Amino acid sequence: MNDETPEATGRISRRQLLKWAGAGLLVNAAGTLLYDPIGRLSMPLNEAVEALLLSSKPTPEFPISAIEPDRLIVNSFRGTPKIDIANFQLKISGEVANPLSLNMAEIQQLPLTSMVIRQVCVEGWAAIVQWGGVRLQDLLQIAQPRSSAKYVYFQSADGYYESWDLASVLHPQTLLAYQMNGRDLPAENGAPLRLASPIKLGYKQSKWVTEAIVTSQLLPKRGYWEDLGYEWFGGL
Image (spheres, rainbow, N blue to C red):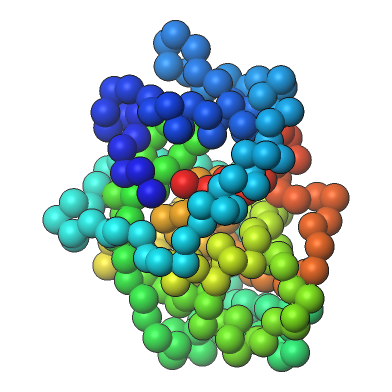
């Protein structure tokens, strides 16, 4: 992962520009991201290259002293949903041998993984954040995906939806987080559970996740922003 971001360095790397172009996003002279429908023509090839570059090795992390609590921007889809955490259940369904429905107490009994990573938004900002939660790798080990499984869909309480390739889901730093910067995850940042990973752009990291659906193929609706023209793989 390239830790340099446009905001941090004042310049845009050639690699990042190519990735944005593949996503149908370009930058004008003022530094504003623009949607470019011509760039979408290269999207399948761009996504294939990103998939090949994906490594199962952990991405280098930052020290706790590097956390930037004031730089994490709260983006919402339809506002912050009201969730009764006492009755909350995370479901893991689809092509699995052992479908799950877990409450927060059961989730928090699983091993806690904490990481300090850079959260990167396609809009151009970035923030170093400490996330803590359960690895999706550990949850899927319990659910036991079938051999046909290739993708995971994520449903959120606010109606947002996303899909990831299974290899990215199983990356050791892909979490369903319930902590942020050493404290309980705030509601506006996705409590009780949100996706957090250093290998994906921010729009892939759904908040208020209620269900993970394991599938063998991508459905026509691949992700909220992807269905509006953003790149599907969304890797870093």
